[in-house]
Structure formats: C-alpha cells, structure tokens
Amino acid sequence: MSITLIVILVVTGIFVGFINTLSAGGTVISIALFLALGMPASSANATNRIQVFIQSFSATLMFKQKKLIDTKKTIRLAIPTMIGALVGSILASLITQNLFSYFMGGILLIMIVFLLYKPKALFEDNPEKINKPLSFINYLTFFAIGIYGGFIQVGTGYFLIAASSMMLGYDIIKTNAIKVSIMFFYTLVAMIVFFFDSQVYWAYGLLHSLGGILGSWIATKFALKKGANFVRWVIIIVIILTALNLFGIVDLTTLFEGIISFS
Image (cartoon, rainbow, N blue to C red; front, top):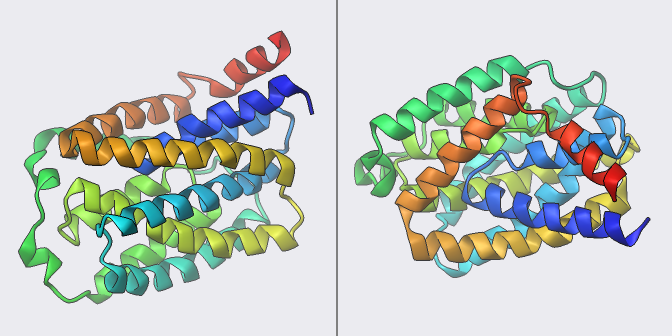
C-alpha cells in the first residue's frame, strides 16, 4: 500500500466522520472510494462498516460526556434496531447492493422539504414527545431502520435522524447523539455477520477509520459551538449530494478512480 493511498484513506475518513457525526450520508464517499480501489460491491459494503463502527463509538463517547444521550431510551431502541440489522446484513451477504438507490434518493429529497418547511421543530426539544412512553410503532420503526442499515448502510443515519426528531421529539443535536449511539450497536451486529462471511478488507477499513475518529471529534465540537441551525444546513447539503449520487448525476466512484490513477 502506497503512502498516497494511505493519505487518501485517512483524509477521506476525516470527511466521512465529520459528515456522519453531524448528519449522515458520508458512507457514500466510503463506498465510492472502496469501489474505485477495485473492491467488489459486497466487500465495499462490508469494509465500510469498520469506519462506521469505530466512528460511531468515538462520537457516542463524546456526546455522552456532554450528557446529550438518553441512555435508557437509546438502549431500548437499539435492541430492535440490532435485530433488524441482523436480518439486513444476512440479506446483504447474499445479494448485491444498490437495489434501493432510486427509492432512497426520493425519500431523502422529501426529507429536505421537512427540514426547510418546519425548521423550528429541529431547534427545540418537544417535552410532550420526549416524556411519552415508547410505543410499538417506535420499536417497529427502529426495527425496519435496522434491516435497511444492516443491508446497505448508505443513508441509514437520515432515517434515524427523522425518527428521533419526529417521533421522539429531540432537537437536532440530541437527535444526532442518539443516531450515532444506535448506529454503534447495530453496526456491531452487521460486522459480526460480514466477518464470518469474509468480505472485509481490514487494512483499508482501519486506515479509513483513523480519519473518521478525527472527523467525529471535529464535528462534535462544531455541533456544540455552532448550534442546531448549522447542523440543519449541513444535513440539507449532504442530502442533496447523496441524492445526486444515488440518481447517477454525480459519480463519486469515477472521481476517486481519477484521483487514484493520477497519484
């Protein structure tokens, strides 16, 4: 592995960690990079989980130190998400990804409407929703998100953000804290499945994760300093770029192939 490739893996990891901690969708960059390096789609999907796991763990610790995570509720919601992730990751080990690209792109664009139309809902906690006991619908929703996350990962954070904000009533900063915590738990399940399926390129994934840890640390500082409105606009911009990539308008894999060949 060349020094240039190591630098590319770490630097892109910083961007991915930053994006995934404040928003979601950074996985698009990771998958595109791994595909450009010649990995099969299934291996790119599996190797990406290393970065997601380590980055979400480090972000969870930082948010926890700031007392932004409702631990009890998060763990209760993580359980159905982990069960869903087990189902999804087994499916992912059997079939190829990209089946949901257009569907997910459409959902993301609809999410932008919510972010623009009712921004105040993201800036403040909703005590009525927060104090409401978790319902069967809450558990079912997070179970479904777990299936999707275990299967393809790309954009799972958006669904966790939407569920935590609209259903649980948390502001965008606490929503991100819950998102990375649940992502840590369900990614652990997915990684175990992919590990036994022998699809993981550990060296690439670990180097990418080093950058992800730094990106998570920077993002956590930004979130607390800049506030909810800044996080909201980061999410909107990343959603647009993610949707463009899913619709094939922006091709990140080709971009990375050019950078790697040039280096």
